[in-house]
Structures are given as C-alpha cells and as structure tokens.
View 1: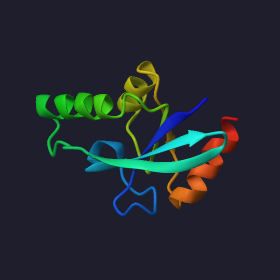
View 2: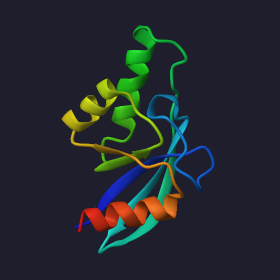
View 3: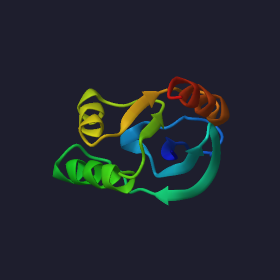
View 4: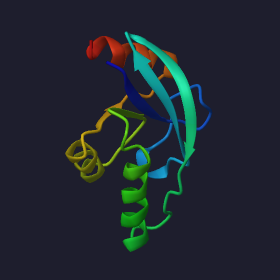
Length: 109
C-alpha cells in the first residue's frame, strides 16, 4: 500500500523548515519501501499570530491532507495535535531528506 510524505524544506535537500513557516512542502510517495518525488506544493505561511495565522495553519494542513506523515525541523505542540487529529503524523527530524525518508520508511514497515 502506498502513502505520501510531506517534507518542509527550504532547499529540497534537507529537512530544515518549521511547519508554521514552510513556504512549500515537497511531496514524495512511498510504495513497497521505495520512494519517489511527486511534486512541490506552495504554501502561504502567516507572519503574525492572529486569526490570519490560524487560517494559514488550516490551509497548510489541508494542502497536505493526503499525506500520512510530515517531516519538519520544528513544530509547535498545538499544531502537532491538529495534524495528528487529521491523521497526519509529524516527525521532527532535521537531517538530509534522503536519510529522513529511510528512517521513516524503516519505522513504518
């Protein structure tokens, strides 16, 4: 069974972006313990902590709603709970994307 992983990254090589600040998510699909890049999805994070921030976070979750996991360098506890409630498990794993993917695939065989 295949599944998707969203990755918060500034450069497409390293998991180096906070979930709430991610301007894009790189999407990979995992099938039979192998992964392939699918697409990059643009995101519009909020720079403030008001109702626009809440809206931006809801939009970010919706943008990756077809993913089972999201890899980030940092995430706040409230956002972590929201993602989990939507069936998306966040992993704080600031390392090279290839290494992070291998770790996640190994954990979820």
